[in-house]
Image (cartoon, rainbow, N blue to C red):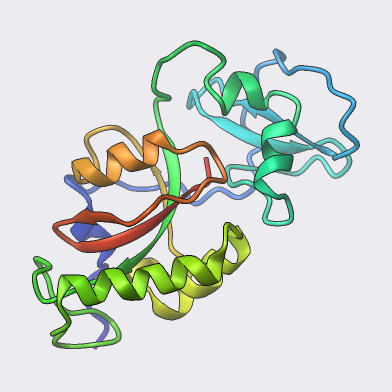
Amino acid sequence: MHPLPLWQDLRNISTARPRLKDVSSHEPYSTRTCKSNSALPWEVRVSTSRGVPYFYNSQTNQSTWEAPLELTQEEIHSLPGAKEYLLGGGAGDRPAQVRASHLLVKHRGSRRPSSWKEQNITRSKEEAIDILKQYASEINGSPQKFAELAREHSDCSSHSNGGDLGLFKPGQMQKPFEDATYSLKIGEISDVVSTDSGVHLILRTG
């Protein structure tokens, strides 16, 4: 029997999460994108209906909430619009919503010490942190490797989506998780973050 979705354990309230991959057909966008000499086909635009940035490919007309996996963190930050919409642009305000993936390792002190992999988790928190640090070393900043390891090892049911939790707003996640996510730039991966659910690596994707 498949357990209840474990990502709900992380949330403070239950909300539906968008599963959009392509927003180009129904997402109006701001025209305030900056020009750049970058040869990359991607740029950053902002959804006027959701108030959050997304990635637009000018060659294929593809739009996606998530940072393209083929781009490095440095390339993401160099895209047209990244300074204004991803790096803050001096505004200092939190975006209305963010999107993140995570890799969760539970321990015996977790408020629900079981997962799709183990019915009864007995490892200590220290052991869970050591495991997570090993994963962080393997990931080495790669979003693609992050998704691969989350799919294989995360103790959250979001593992089936490579750790993707979808979009969420302030107040929907446990405070340490929310604060860590909002402190990241898109494409960045957190250090070890501890919540009542366990210990996490967090990749901000939108």
